[in-house]
Image (tube, rainbow, N blue to C red; front, side, top):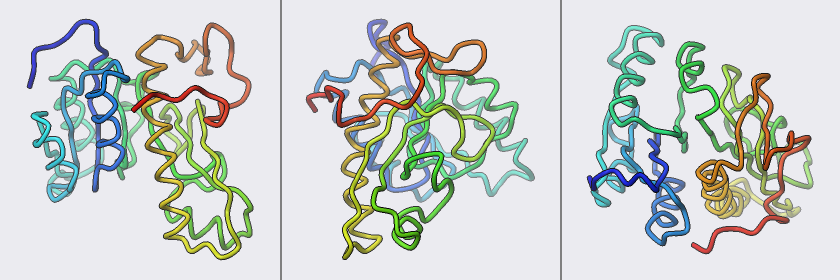
Length: 226
């Protein structure tokens, strides 16, 4: 791993699977559009494909296998210890499929983001693309939010909206949403790196010094050139 760069926000990325959002973040960082240094990628699954992406980029790839711990508290403690070795300013959950306990969330309060494939608060949880189609929604999308103890809860920072076509399959819809995720997440992380966004004492988002009444919309934002 390269030496720490004080001009860049140090981040640690948590994954459980293929790492497509991880790749999008690395691509933006490599282009210089995203002012971060990825200190480590950590997965709870030894076979996660995203670990190979990290290794190919020269980034420490760490496995904290949840199945080897007796309970959530023990796993959370091991995960927190692994993360804190890299001193991140921001913890980025990118397809990390584990619920985190209250103590863990409190430790990273205000500096932990997650991306979820729906327009939160609608459709928390899994299988969102199929559920959106089955419910007859005309619109779907993705949300970046600060992490709370509630599953896919926490205040939402920014969303990307995707129209649902009548003939859409869940796979087709998922592919279009994923394209937007790859634009959405680096932008949200860059806002944090630029100190444009923070949580106030009551847990509400402040954006450019003003309380955020509703999530920002990707369609109206200037996205990163990466």
